[in-house]
Length: 465
Image (cartoon, rainbow, N blue to C red; front, top):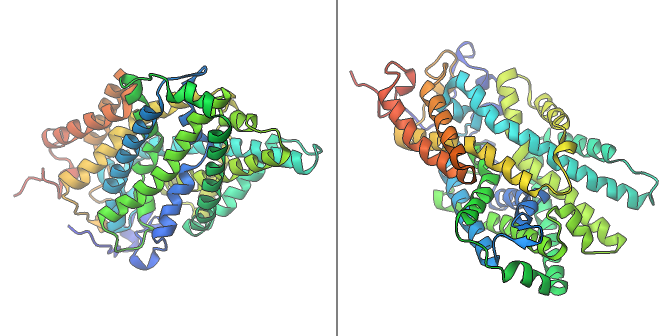
């Protein structure tokens, strides 16, 4: 067993991923992201309308479910877990250079990866469509302001924004690094500006609605921890797709800080501003709440630019790369064609039906439902890598056609489905229930079932002759 990047498989013995340039393991010379670039990914990803809506969702019909201390505590707990999951799950990709779809193969098998990868890719594509529709709506506002009302078409704004993201994404992580570096600075500047306006002009109503409310430290509190956590569940599940782009030489502790600090700054501040905005305006949808703060055409232009930048930033990091890799894995198409297909799928996900004026609770439920499946999946990946394989990966075997990982690991599929079913018993705590259940069920199934499974090879459950 090895943790080295060999990739010396003859072409006739290589699987589809080994024959696809963007899915091959990355060596040290291929990695371009340093501290600033990697941190910028998570700042740019954290500042967007969807995340602000999650913060706003603590206020329902003008009444806050959590007060300021509970909201901040829920956010910090969630971000701490998010950072820990990133640091644990990114190690396989960081050390070996393999992408998420190849990491999945180690636990679920080549055929089983079809199901498990789609559970990550489908929510990403839907989010891609939602964020692009929100951004397209904002781009249309820019059109109306600049043309003095002569041009008014949300559909046109949506198509233009989608096309722009597809073109930007075709250059891979090089374009993502550039976009996120710019977006992280611009977006945080805008969030700070909105925060100052809220504190200056709406302090009293925010105090009455949010700060002084009794709130809850019970199930509602932990439910919001799961919501804030679940919003990142799909991203840290595919942590290998990002960590493989980070330059070598970073310890586990340093990589953990590269997640925690930027996400606290961006996601934490956006959650707080979202709750403040809902308290001040009564709107849980920031697309309505932000304009309600102002009555000035230049400020409206300012807000629209914020929304457009936010949509692009979050899609470039969270919603484009992994679905593109999944499409490549199963179609053998090149990266540029796969990026285009991802964009077209986002376009036909009917985001205009999913994005409503008052959508906060629906968004919460969407996050909770898909996190019921993603919690078990990341538990399986972590148990596989740390417990069963002791952090040793045979990279060549992962890329070998008709090798050890060709079939479906039934133990992983069954563990995922059982854990997801248990998660739905209490959907407000779906992610944690699914995660803990799968972490217990999967190693038990691996030890006691499917005795001749090839997936036991090179694990602690391999029978020594």
